[in-house]
Image (cartoon, rainbow, N blue to C red):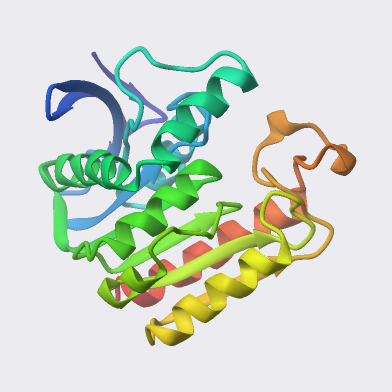
Length: 246
C-alpha cells in the first residue's frame, strides 16, 4: 500500500521480522528530496503503533527526514483497552533483552530505507516508546540521538548507560505521577555516572502523555494533554536534531 499525501509526502506500511515474529511498521518521507537525509525511528506508546505515531511520522517527513514508526508488539497486536495495553507494555518492560531486540529490528528496518543517511539517525519515543528509545541507547546502538517524550526513565541495568553513544534528550512532565522525582533523580545519576551528553527538560504543570490530545485535559487523572508542553518539547527536539545532524 502506497499513498501520496500532502503533495510529496509518501507513506507506506512495511512488514518486517524479529526472529519468528512478524512486525508491521510505517514509513514516511518526502519523495522530492533526492539526497541522503537523516532517519528518525519512532517508538509507539503503550497501545501500539497507531494514528498518533503515523501523524508524527508525517510531521517528520515534512521536515525532510525519513521517519519510520516501528512496531514492538507484533502485527495485529494493538491493545484496545488500558488493561490490554498495560499487559503488553509490562511484558516488554519486564524483558528488556526482548524489548531491545524488537527496537533494534525497527532500527535495522529504518536503515534499509532508501535515502537514509546511516551516519545521521535518531530514535524518539512516547511514554512506553520513550522508555524503549532510551533502552536502544543503553544497548550501545550506533545512533546520534535519543528523544524521550514523557517516557519512563528507569532501567534495571543503569550500568548499561556506559554503552550510550547517542546524545540524550528527555522531555518530562514535571508533575507526571508515573515518573516520580526519585526516578528522575536516578536517571540523572545514571547519566552523570556514565558521562553521557544528556539533557532533561521538565515542563511545569504537565503530567503523563502531555503531547497526546486524546489524553484529555484533566491533570488529576495523571495523564493529560498540555498544549504548551507539546509545542515546547517538539521545538526542543527540532533544536536537538539541528545540533546532532549538522
